[in-house]
Structure formats: structure tokens, C-alpha cells
Amino acid sequence: MSAAPVGTREIGRHAVRAELARVAFNRFCLTGFDQVTFADLAEAAGVSRSTFLRYFGTKEDVVLFVFDPVGDVIADALDADRTNEDDWDRLRNALESAVAFLVRDVQELMTILGLIDQTPALCARLREKQTEWRPEIVARLQEATSSADESSVIANVRVAAALECLWIVLGQWSASGGQEDLGELLDVAFAAFSAPVRRQTDAPSS
Image (cartoon, rainbow, N blue to C red):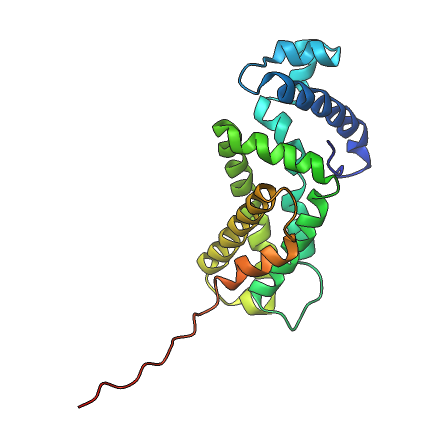
């Protein structure tokens, strides 16, 4: 279990957190999320409980450590020069970057998603993270020409919808055992926002 460090000053702390998260995740999978305490995690990692708590304040954050950089990955991807794309296309491509980041270890991601799906506390905390990411993603999106003069409500709605697409797609991919193509699933999800083509009906006879 790993996530990209933010900068060189964080590399040491990141390495410790990554190792603690790896050990903890194995314990969660073996024993069950709700049954494991911080004392159990500290013992498994060979550190004191207080040391473990310096790196992770909640058990939920231990499991979701791998998702920590996702907001920045999406926001940074929006900086790419795609002048011919509208907001939906830019968000779709940014999510492609997030997916590429997350699926570096397919089996690990599937295991994490399975644990999240079975644990309401993890689902709730992941939602909180999604909300924490949104302001920066919205700000980057609004820097594009297509959003600059629009209400922030519109950008917030678009970003919230895109993030929801990401979790639905990851859930569907996990349910398929990793067999479905994530890129195709993203395309299908974003196509749901396209205006439906109305079928013409014959005019009623007089």
C-alpha cells in the first residue's frame, strides 16, 4: 500500500506512514476492521500506540491512505493544456489520471475497495475526503476559459458529479473482479450526462 509523497521534506514521514498502513491493512484483512484496535495495530507494527497515532489519527485514515493524493492528481491533471475541451472532457481525462494512479496494484486496490464496501465507517470517511478535495479541483477547473465566467455553483456541481462517477466506476470495476475496462466504464458514466436523443413519434392522425 503506497501513495505518492507530496515533496522531499515529506518523504521520510511518507515512508513511515506507508509501512504502518501496509502492516495495518494486513491486520484489518485478517481480523476485520471493527475488531482491530490501535493497540493491535501498534503491536503488529512494532511501535508504541502513541507513535502510531502520530501518523494516523483514525483507523479509517489508515485504510484510506492510498487515496490521499487522488485530489491533487485530479487537480494537477486539469492544468494540462486542452484548449479544445469543455469542462466535462477535462474532468473525464483528469479522472483517467486518478484511475491510472490507483490501479498500479490491481489486487491491492480490489481488496481495499472490498473492505470499504463492507465497512460503513470507511465509506463515510471516503465521502469526507471527496468533499475535502473538491474546492481545489473546482478552483483548477474554473481557471479554464469555459468556466471562468460561470457561477461557482456550476463548477461545484460538475466536479461533484465527476467524483461520484469515479466511485461508481471503481465499484463496478471491483464487482467485475477487475475484468471490465476502467476507461470504458468512465466513458459510459460520463455519457449519462449527455442529453438523451428524443425519439420522434408519428403525429396523431386526425
